[in-house]
Image 1 (cartoon, rainbow, N blue to C red):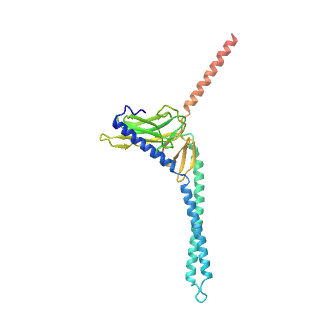
Image 2: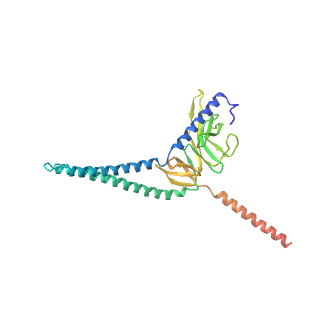
Length: 271
């Protein structure tokens, strides 16, 4: 939006919202879904290496023990117990990984029923689908609220100043940037800010709404896909089925129109 007609406080409010949106975009782009998986694999590999090292040390100790003073049976037994403990730990980690994988597969199958539903989430990721995105926030009457949207590169593509009403407010974005250009569907980052009478800015709690198009296994949680936007399942606050009544009514209406048209054509032919 144009900043030429903004007051100093409005400009400061917009700047704060833009900074937060850029920060959210940077955080999202730096998060790798493979980090946790790589860490778990590395830990298991380390255990296996320790297992091999322990075996090597024990064998070397037996080979170089003093024949006149061999290793005591108590010490030998103690080291064998430690050896078995390491082996068991490696096996436990391996089986646990398999169990988690099976559980995630089952959850993925059951959660697939959510595809096609409309979901609301407490996420800074704003899904733009079919050139439409929605942000919901609570406000007070007359409250000035700044909304800023950033792309994945951290560039502000849209910002807006709105006057809130008391209760739930909905801000809908048509996917156009500040210059009026239509942007492609995808995952954007959004921030919502307000300012008090003393000029202090603060975050406004908000949710985003979109249509679930897929389910996938994430790093620490199942994730829903809203177009190319990915949001953890734990961030969903509401899921509702999209009503098909309107489309059914439309189909019925279309069918009735066709019947009327056929009747009309038949009458014309008969006359």
